[in-house]
Image 1 (spheres, one colour):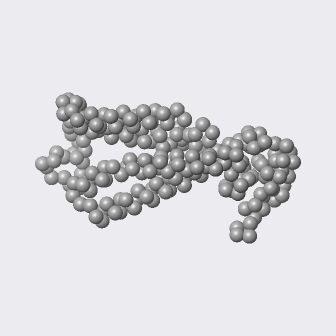
Image 2 (image 1 turned 45 degrees about the vertical axis):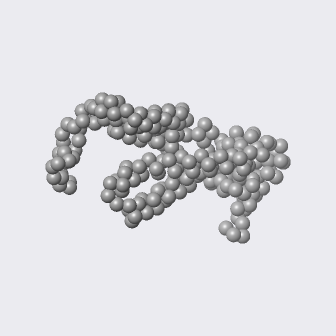
Image 3 (image 1 turned 180 degrees about the vertical axis):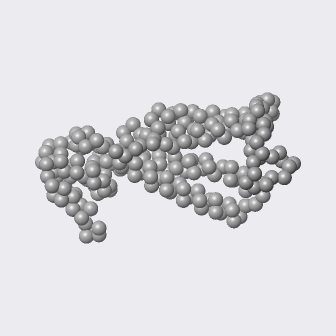
Length: 158
Length: 66
């Protein structure tokens, strides 16, 4: 029996809801400083503070202050996974193949973007791009998968 | 790969939806197989052959390009 690691179809709606909440939260925190700086909470960090030297493969566990950015990233991560890896209501091998092809396409496109970013973008902008790439893979996959699924259903509707 | 799925389905007087329900796939998948847009897995091919009570090779044949 082949194991299916996909979530139930209801998780897709939960995932979209989380993505919308993350986006709204992101815009609000960028717009209102009181909201952004009021959301400080203690969390564990494994890297030293910015003004201290960091040695690779050595960890410095400490309590630091986390905030809205960590919340947004968490919501985005969970939302993307739920949306991308939820079953269809009518799941069969053809849809599984469409899902696999879309995933391969998204990974390849994302790696091309990473390569172009690495070659042509430097400094802080590069780090900003790197922070986006975990989600861009999922977003490319979700877009490609839904387009492919729509085309498949439209072409085989008769 | 060529197939005689549509012919066999007509012989047995089955709609695409009925055949899809018997083998556990969607109607669009059956349509895609009949049009040659999708090659079914071994398991699905065997299920389809069992529905029509025919050997697998009578329903699915290799193309010259395969």
